[in-house]
Length: 167
Image (cartoon, rainbow, N blue to C red; front, side, top):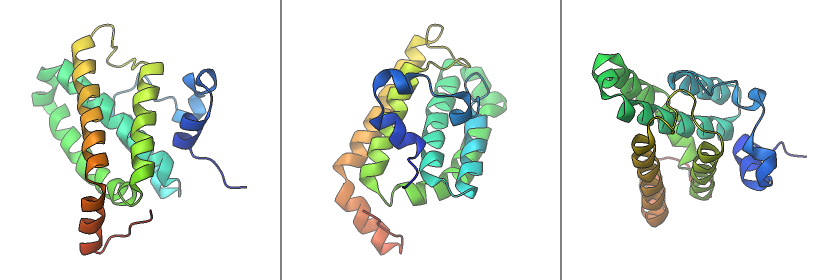
């Protein structure tokens, strides 16, 4: 039997079962600096769990962007350049994989947004920074819709660049 990935489990499980994934499932990341999600995504990718890595990368991106939006002074003081560096170094191999299966990527983005709503960020709490959360969540939803509307174009561009389209 094929092992279900974290993202698939979040999408397929009934609400209460996935509303609180175990600390094992997410490595106890909630409450840590958002860079920890990128580190864990890299580890998972290296261990052959790319779907879980995609989920954690996008959850980390959502939470890092929220942190920077909520605390703009941190963006100038090192967290902005750190976000850019991690998004490039971690994001490139993860996105090369993720964009090879656009239906799975879209489902993962839905799962990330659902998880984020069910398990609020403790590092940048929505109760303290509601506008930052709204802006960044809206941005991820818009990104998701952009990808959904450009699927054939993305597939063609990947093929032209020699990248695999798995589905």
